[in-house]
Image (cartoon, rainbow, N blue to C red; front, side, top):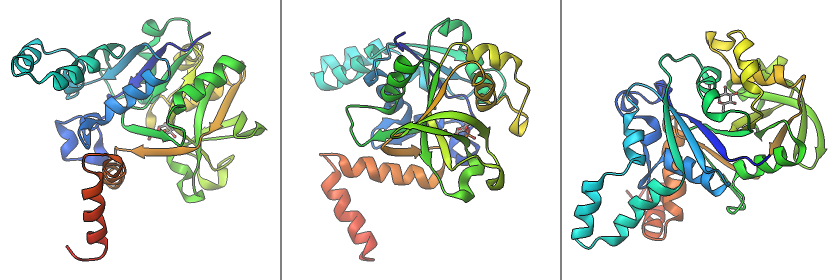
Length: 293
Ligand code: G1P
């Protein structure tokens, strides 16, 4: 079955990024001139997704406004002959069918995904965490596309993996299993934020999933886990006893915008690649590093 739908959880408070995240959704913070969530939506679209459900909550309405047309603005830009800006706005609104749903209480990632049950129905779907941009070495094959290929070929579900250091395993969902092809791991264990001594490996889930719709049955019967929240990892570990779960070590980079240092690094990363400002930014960074400014 083709993967056509995606869910983007974007309801979390962003407590690692206060005070800015109090009234401004962390997903709306810019990487140069585009909000983080636009990069995430573009990754989904470039992976063949045509329908996107964004899970939001209080203080997140700016995300809805970003993807909805504002006719008056378009008319005004058109009257001024700013056709390029009009096209940018129209592309933003026509990339995919984008829907929103409200998560009333912060019950964890698993709880956020459960709100997508009726919308997703009975087909495999992608999950892209709304505060993380993932870039791949081969830009024509976004990580969500690579996961969809795994699921379309092997069935079940798949997650993106990156190796982390032993002291960082307690920050992630950690997957253990057997490597059945280069970079492809058939999961045997999946644990949310284990202590280093209990971790089955150092392979951490990296903000991207393609899930079988059967995950919803497991989310409904999974008890609250780490932090008193419904953990997607726990429901996937339960589903793993019925259907295959694969982990894919991808060749690329994860930019977690939910924390301050990585946000600034990501702005440099994307800024340096830009044709319009890249050269000048490189000069500035070099002079900063040399202690000239
Ligand atoms: C969530 C997941 C975790 C995953 C991480 C990064 O944790 O629960 O399994 O490894 O995202 O993708 P959070 O960062 O929301 O605490």
